[in-house]
Length: 429
Image (tube, rainbow, N blue to C red):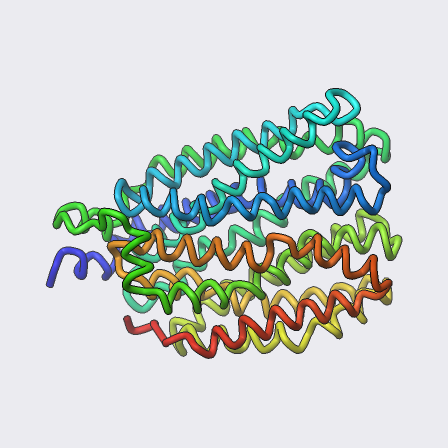
């Protein structure tokens, strides 16, 4: 048995626990930074950075900057993936966290359009692109560190620690905005929205402390020892695993598109169209995020027993059939029914996201695993989530009905369902 094959069997228990914590805490902080931008885009960026536009157009412009950040993610996936496969997983994890923290604090310090004019939205766009570059490599590094340290038969379980960072980061972001609830609208618009961005510097310090204490992935250590690292990993992926790149990317389109309708568009829709108060909508999103987190953990462990593909299929089918009931329930304005709507939706999101770290890692050879997994994740995110809030806003505005958004969600869900059907089972790889 080669050193690489032996390393795939996992790390010692103490290091495994430390890596699991580092993956969970680090991605939570990373996605907190990412999601406070989404929340601020829904609530305040239109008036702060696009104040010369009509309110509806300003919201569209704010969501457009959200989408532009996604365009940088495949580039980030290629860059971080290349160095993650050449230099190491741990170094890229630390670098991605630092870049995200820099960009997020920068947004919190950014002057508004009324203060510096056109330069304000330009700088906002630049900082958003830096966030996108960071996010393009963060997930791949965190997922691989968890999966490559995990013992055989538990890759789904430990891979889920990187996945829970998404809903956990969202919960943390929403709680911070809820804590700002006592501020009136003028105070929130003037300075209150900046506090979540500035608070990021504390979280990044915590994340760095944790990540600096973990060991390099045993798989990468073995690759380096045997001197079998790919020279240009992305080229090798395209040459040897084009089918896996295609189905992996397409399988993620629905999850990220519908996920961003839930976490970014729903807040804007509830407050501006349905006229539900901000605190109630934040509460609905937080409860949905908790449901999402629990379903990620459950589905990931389930995939260790029955396989990645069956769990993915359950989640993908649910994402096809639920969008119409979802918005019918949301449109009632009943808090209880809105909570029911988001819980069922996030169960589908969790089942199609929980096993993803293990699945994507098992799809690609260790020599180019960081590149293959990161690029697939980033492309799926661009095609699905990049402009989902913008598309949803435009559809609802032009048609006057939320069912047009439901139709969009069904279309992307069908695309991913077809891709999932084409996935080869990897649990025993």
